[in-house]
Every structure is written in structure tokens, then in C-alpha cells.
Length: 340
Image (cartoon, rainbow, N blue to C red; front, side):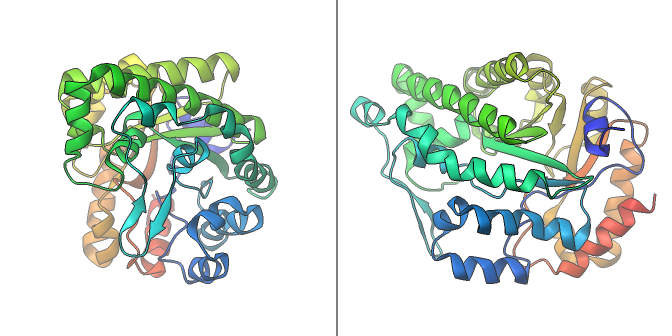
């Protein structure tokens, strides 16, 4: 019998639903912090298979989730393309920003296969350890990855990115095309190494006007899903165009994903109405409700489960778990979901 998460992504309304959490391997776990301290740098942690395997499996051992997601980062792809990447303490990722054609030409797709080899070794190692859980690979959506490549760091408004998309569509489109092609290569390699499903995180999709959303979120996703479907029939893709709002239904219809992640702001009654019945919905507990725990978390979890009963559904957060979250709250959440 197929694993619960894979049955859900195949369109079955399994109940209780499978559960996993975005950023489930991370700083809220003391065992993760121990490994992180030994790694030296975050990039070393992502590219040292023994360490990346350990932190991928830690939440599975502790909570018994229905999925283990590869421990890595969406910016491993720009790093593999040769764009300088470092993680500054308290500041997040830092990259030399790409603002012109010379910056785009400096990226080297020939580097990618060698650079991602340690990450694929992690996938191969984890696959034999996940048991009944599903091993998820992932990549950033091309637009979100391009955000960091152009801006050079995190941002709230992504002004430089949106300005380039409007004022120099040839340059920005060329960057999106390159990232899209290499995302296909990267995800395909993860599947070859043992990933049973993959997720596409477009965390900043919601900052775009509808015309740019169609061009730089939907169109690349269509290409990625179609290419993976041709190379790896039967391997499902979960899309997560965060804060897509009214564009969500169009994204699902066009992209052809088997699962759709929805963020905390999404009204599940509207999502249920607008998303075809055979597409799995994934989400969308507020990470701060999980941080709060207790009755507030339990009420919100109960409401989400009631809204999704009878549909293919994967219980998750609407964004990543925050580092201050007590592990006991996560254990209580998993127990509540499993008890329905």
C-alpha cells in the first residue's frame, strides 16, 4: 500500500490526514542546534551529507511525521550557479546582486551538477531511513529564487526585483528562464536520488501584480511540472505560491500540481470551493498559533480539520515554524491531528 502522503497526493481523502510542518528541521529543536554548532557554517551543514541527513531525520524520530523534507535551502541553486552566497548572523542570506546582463552572464550552469552532488548524497542516504514517511525534495520557485539573486538579501517589498521585472523584462525574463531550467535539473536529480514527491516554494509570489504573477510564477511552474511529469511519471509536485490570493485557482488549473500549499491568510472554505476535488490541499495553521499552543492552537487546528474533512488534505503550517516554538507544542499538535 502506498504511503499516506502519497495516497493523499493521488487524490484520496485519507483520514486522519498526513501531517508534517514546514521548517520542521530547525532551530526550535535542541538536537538541531547541537548539529548546527558542529557544522561551522550553514552552507557546510547543507552540503555535508552526514550532518544534513541527521537534521532531516531528527523531527521524524521525535514526532513521527508523515514526511521528511530534505534539509537544505532554496539558495543552494544560486550558490551552485556560482553566485556568491554567505549567511550573516542576524542578517540572513547575502549575495552579490545581479542588476545587469554581465551579472546574468557570470552564472554558470555547468557548475550545478558538481555543486549539488553532496545534496543528492543526502537524499540517497535519507531515503533508506524514512520508513513509512514520504521523502520530499524541494526547490524554491524561480521567482522567489530570483528575488534574492537580484536584491542580494531579504526584503519586504522586493523593490529592485519588481523594478527590473517592469523596466527590463528581457533581463529579468532571462534570469527566470535560467533558474527555471536549472530548477528542473535540480528537482529531477533529487527524484533520481530517491525523493518520492517534490515541493516548489514560491514564498514571495504574493508581491506580484497579476500580469507578473502569470509570467513569473505560473509560467515557470507550468514548465517545471510538465518537465518533471515527462521525466518522472507518477511523482507528485506540491506548489506553494504563498499569498497568491485570488490567483490561487488559476495557478492550480494552469500548473497541474497534485498538491497546493496555502498560507495562513487563506480562507479554507474558499480554497475548498476553488481547488478541484482531486488536488490535495496543504496547510495552513498560523505558526504563531503553534507557538502559543494550548486552547488557541487546539481550536484553530480543530477548525482546519473540520473545514477539510472529506477532501485530500495534508495538515501543515501556513508558513515555517518559528524558532521559539516549544517542541512540546509540536508533539501536542501531531497528537491532536492523529486523534481525529
